[in-house]
Amino acid sequence: MNFNLYIPIGIIVFSNVFYHICSKSMPEKLNTFVALPITYLVGAVVSFILYFVLYRDGNYFEELKNINWTTWVLGIAIVGLEAGNVYMYKAGWDISTGQLICSSALSICLILVGIILYKEHLNPSKIAGIIICMIGLYFINK
Image 1 (spheres, rainbow, N blue to C red):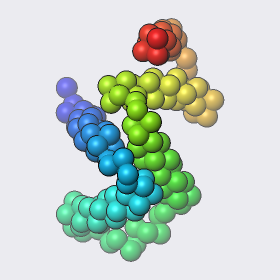
Image 2 (image 1 turned 180 degrees about the vertical axis):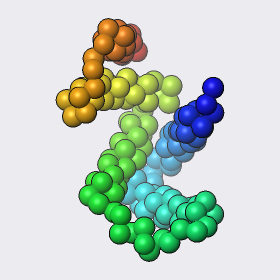
Image 3 (image 1 turned 45 degrees about the vertical axis):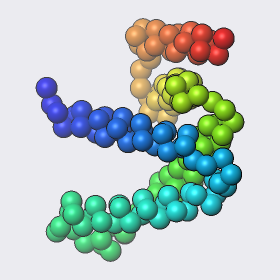
């Protein structure tokens, strides 16, 4: 078993648990767009420090030359993710179901994106997964 394959999954799951706890616990009276710049400032500082800790021989300013449109669009997407999740919880969604519904819907969308943009193949197990997600969404929303 290749643990390097699973370490990123562990980081994602661990981080997502705290992400959703923080999103759900954000004060109701706090404007989301006041909180997000502080969140991003902390993220920027942590990212900057991690670059120098993990890539001691790297040249930060040389790396900046590799930035393309994806970095800018990812920034916009992250604002949508953050704000959407905070608003989802402020609207009253339970932490146990709100993200599950989003993840199921996202999974279906990403299967379609994979097929259309990346020429991935739709096999019987993926079709079964889509059907299971749709059935699950039905029962969660019932």
